[in-house]
Length: 346
Ligand code: FA5
Image 1 (cartoon, rainbow, N blue to C red):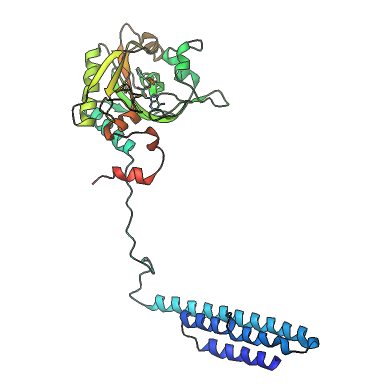
Image 2 (cartoon, protein in one colour):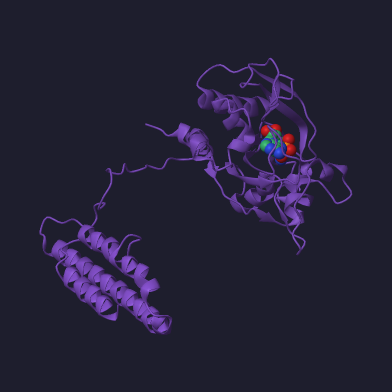
């Protein structure tokens, strides 16, 4: 039995030396170590070995198996090294190409629909002489509330549920935080937009996210008018939708504007019939606005007897929903590529 084991080992070594590629190597692996292989066949003869000799023979079987296994691995490494060396010597070999399988198509990224619409808005307002500004998402309580005529005791603070940070700062609940910053930075007269992400601690549904996008518009001059504000908003909407959309203007209350308005758009998802997005009303709140409150101008370092302003706070995420008739706001930041790939351009 021991002689037979040595013979199998010698046979294996000779066979492995003659193996030319991985396929042949696998054949030999099966031939010597497989379930029906030479070593297994030998082991069946164990029952004929005298009981006293079995431990010794068993140990030798294990040694032979280990030696054949390591000889196979060594041969595998040699073959792989030889294959790579041959490739390196081949002048036609291109290491950047996939080695096997069908040719891969390159997947091309695309701008997120929110980014596309934001850029469109920026173009429209830049053409009308507006600055493009960018402000922090982490803000002070003063900037988010007090500077906008919303003192701590004001019930309007409850209108926007807030994510507070441990250090007393907060995640901005609206882009209006930039109003006073812009007044102080630019000095009047000026006109500016500041798009960005905002956060609210509120229940999420088809038209409400905890993280969404707004775009603030602000114009300060000696004399501004509601007519001018409405014209700017109409220009925005006609450029974005490139089709007629029905809107309505109604009075709205915000402590930082006086008078204040709400511009609603007829729901583009259901065509005004009523759905989950518009909560069966047929209308979606889109563009609150108004004339800047004198207290806000004062916080911006401006004399309200000398300067006037108008502002709007566009619900940018909702605008994207309306433009593309998206039936749930949660698709926007959900990260599902099947959804996003629909907005690939060109
Ligand atoms: C504001 O945030 C004011 N800062 C807007 C403003 C600016 C008024 C300047 C006057 C002058 P409001 O909370 O209504 O207002 O939000 C503005 C818009 O953001 C809404 O009309 C809506 O389109 C959108 N919006 C509000 N909450 C959510 C939400 N949870 N998810 C998605 N969009 C929202």
